[in-house]
Amino acid sequence: MKKRKKAVTILLLIMVLLQGCSQKPEVQDTVKQIEESKGQGKEIETTGQYAVKDMIIEETTNKTEVVVMAAEVESKTESITEPEEVKDTVAIKTTEEAETTAEGMVTIIGESKKLNVPSITGALHVEGTKLMGSNGEEVQLRGISTHGIAWFPDYINEECFRQLRNEWNVNVVRLALYTAEYNGYCTGGDREYLKNLIRNGVNYAKEQDMYVIVDWHILSDSNPNIYLNEAKEFFQEISAEYADSSHIIYEICNEPNGGTTWQDIKSYAKEVIGVIRANDEDAVILVGTPNWSQYVDQAAADPITEYNNLMYTLHFYAATHTDDLRNKMVSAIESGLPIFVSEYGICDASGSGAINEEQANLWVEQMDNYGISYVAWNMSNKNETSAIIQNWCNKTNNFSLEELSAAGQWLYKTLTKN
Ligand code: IDC
Image (cartoon, rainbow, N blue to C red):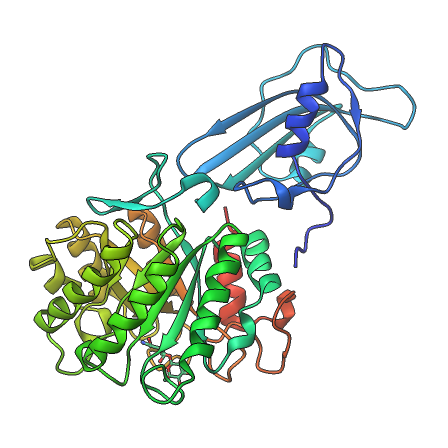
C-alpha cells in the first residue's frame, strides 16, 4: 500500500536505541517494525544507517511528534560523521527533505496522528459534547462501516481489520446489521448466522485494538418501533455477552425516516437503552435522529436526560448535503449536543452518483475542528460509488491502492494524512 520507498519505524527503534545508548552513539541498521508501535501508527521513513544522538518526543492531544537527531553513518566502516554539537532541529516533515537539507547531520521529524485505540483510551464515555477516553483524553474515532453484513459478510475477516487498523489508521469499524431488507434480521435473515458475524466483527476489532459499533440498521422500516421487540432481544443478548468489553459501542437505530418523529425515536431509545444499561452500565450508545439522521436540532432541543453516555447521530452524503446540514451540525454541537457521524459518503445520498471531494473535505475539516468522530460508508466492492473497493476486485483483504475505488482512495488518503 505504501508508495514510499522505505518505511522505517522510529518510535520503537529509538526507544530501544536510547536504552542501549550511553555516551557513545551506536550505529544502527534501519529497521522495519512500525506496525508494532502501538497506537502511534504512522511510519517514518529513512534509509541508510544512523548513529542516534538524541531525540525528543512531544505528545499533544492529537499528535505525537518525534524528533530524532542523528548522524548519518558515511560508510560501513567505523567513520561516523558526528557533529560537534546537535544543532537546532529544523521542522521538516519528510526524510527526503532531511536528506537534502542536512550535511552530516540528519534530522528526522516524524509526525503521526495519535490514534485513540482501546489499549490507550480504554472504555469511552461522554462529557458534554466530547467522547472521552478512560485516560481523560478527548477521543476522535475515524473509520469505516461494513455494507450490510448479510450481503457482504466476507469483509469481516481479521486480516482485513488488521490492514484497516495498521495501514489506514482506522480506529473504529461499524458493523451494519440491516433489519428489514432482503435477508434482514427481522425479515427472514438467519439470525444466528447474522449474530455470529457480529460476534466475529466485535472480536476481530478487539484483537486489532479498535473500537467497534454494532449498528441496528433500520432503513426501509422507517420507524424503529416497528421492530422494537426484536431490537430489545438482540441488544439484550449482545450487550450481555460483551458487558465486560470496553471497545463496543451500540448504535440502536441507523436512520429513522418517513414520518418518524423525534418523540417516536425517544420512546424507542429509552426502552432499548434500558435493556443495554441493565447489562452494561456505561457503554456509549448512539441514537439516530429524524429524517435519515439529519435533524440533530430536534434532539438538541429535547435530548434524552435519563441516561448518560449517549451521542446523537448525524449522517451526510457530501454530494447531496452541504452547508445547510453542516451548519445544523455545528449549531447542534455548539448548543451542547454530543454528535457522532456514524455514517457518511462523499457521493450522493443514493450511495452512488458523482463524488464531491470539495464538499467532502469541508465536512472533514469541520468534523476535525470539533473533534467529531466519523465513519465512512461502505466496505464492499458493490457497483456503487460509495463502495471503497473496485467492483472488479474480489479480494477481501490486503488491498492495494489500485484496488480501491475513487471513494476508497480518497478515504485512505484522508485517514492517513497527518
Ligand atoms: C445503501 C447501499 C445500497 C443498498 C441500499 C438499500 O449503499 O447498496 O442497496 O442501501 O439497502 C443511507 C443508509 C445506507 C444506504 C446509504 C446509501 O444508511 O443503508 O446504503 N445511505 O444509499 N443513508 C443515506 C445513504
